[in-house]
Image 1 (tube, rainbow, N blue to C red):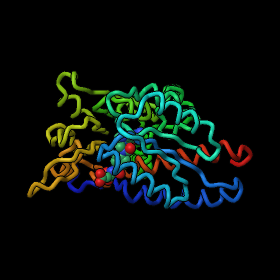
Image 2: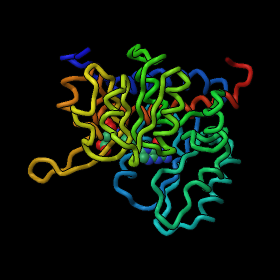
Image 3: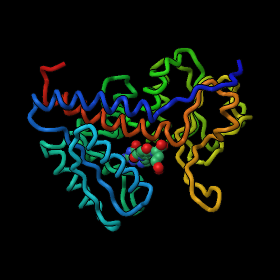
Image 4: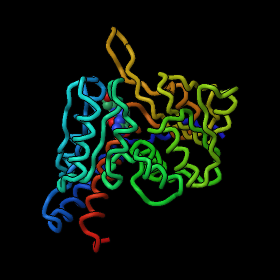
Length: 295
Ligand SMILES: Nc1nc2c(c(=O)[nH]1)N[C@@H](CN(C=O)c1ccc(C(=O)N[C@@H](CCC(=O)O)C(=O)O)cc1)CN2
């Protein structure tokens, strides 16, 4: 099946809708709980992209009524300093969600810091307990970008059960959890990566193709089955016209859009959904651990 007019999966619009719903939920819960939900984003150093994402998260928190209780550390902050701060935030009753903005400077061990976060406050869903729950299909906090992908597919009523899904990329942040979430919805999932032989043939099998490789416009038209649903998780800053920088995904959007049935844009696709799912996780922890009798 080929599709000449692909439907754009509008993550920006859906993220705004989710934020409005969360705002109402927070207003209702706050009157019962007596304080707003709190999210602590920990940022280390001055990575310019991270600074943009952290600012986006703080602005989104403000819109929804979540208190931003984050901290910005200098680039030479130590592992012990960060671990200590996370332990304090674990004990802080004003804080419902904690996240460590990635990537961290190279001298820090991100995995062991992620594991310092209490699993109930793990707004990023990257703690081993929450990843383990995902493996078992138990309810728990789910990582934000993969959860955003699934929510977008759900919103557009895209069938998943029985479909062939190919995920390119095997990171803990995106590739592995999104593959598990697609599997949970009964897709037949293949994970492709840098060592995959005949990547083109593997990709062309996909009814749902998720690109999470971090290589600008690597997925070209010849790698996509006509009629496929194409989800672009990549966010790459490249040089555009007149030396100005621009954002592109891992998918060559213009040419792939000619044959896809649905496609996510960059910007405006999965990026805003990541932030929406972070807020949703924070509000869910706030609700769950402060109103055990409220459904
Ligand atoms: N602890 C985490 N670190 C990182 C994550 C994560 O989920 N948890 N993901 C990415 C960055 N990220 C969130 O932190 C993120 C990336 C992009 C966007 C976004 O809204 N993008 C916009 C464009 C924004 C721009 O102008 O650059 C879009 O795609 O429309 C939000 C969050 C790595 N680190």
